Image 1 (cartoon, one colour):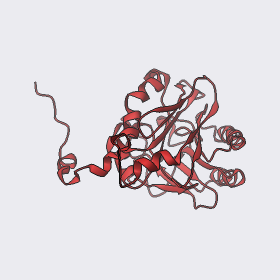
Image 2: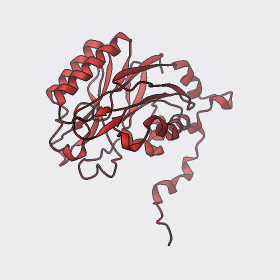
Image 3: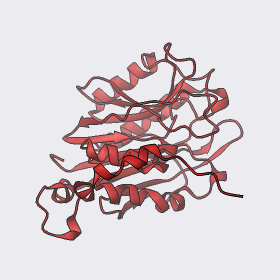
Length: 285
């Protein structure tokens, strides 16, 4: 990292198919973040359109929609990199993507498309097939969406590509359990094993129909330590300051202490062939 940076993580309510109302929430929260001098502002999964696999064909728009152009203008005006979840339609595929737009001042619009779809999403969405990394504000960063973070290989790929910060937007409902408690079981390991900062956020409240989301934001340091986590039950922006010196010390080539080890530097990739050849074994009966 070239400099310290301040990230913002949003927990917000998003109603299914109410793009304009959701857009207004997003821009309002972006203005709040601007006052806090936040550089990166990450919104939850499908924040712009609401999260509902069964409604995916009817909601959302192409990446070139007027809403996206207005969000681009918002990012430019406020000087903030916005990471906004949406349902993205593309004429090249039959079903939409679950995407995270990355809108950064002075940089061409970028997008991450969810690679690992949950089983309830497979019939309604097209999975992405790339692991892009992005650069803004002197930081190399990447995105994975919700279910993606149950696959540790993804975080390793991002770290090996140079990502210093990874974002984890979610749309996790109340029925799934306390999101922050669940996150602490595995997101700390994603950050620790790969020496990255990690910022997670979730939808909160009603989807405008029948589902409730549990909210939650969490920032984790490159040694798996919790830096911040949200403590309120309403919409809001939660921010954390990330130290460049901290991660640069860990990532330096010559390490003088086990405490500052960058574990991926010592991996034995020549022995990992089986990882891509083996499949899950069916239990014997």
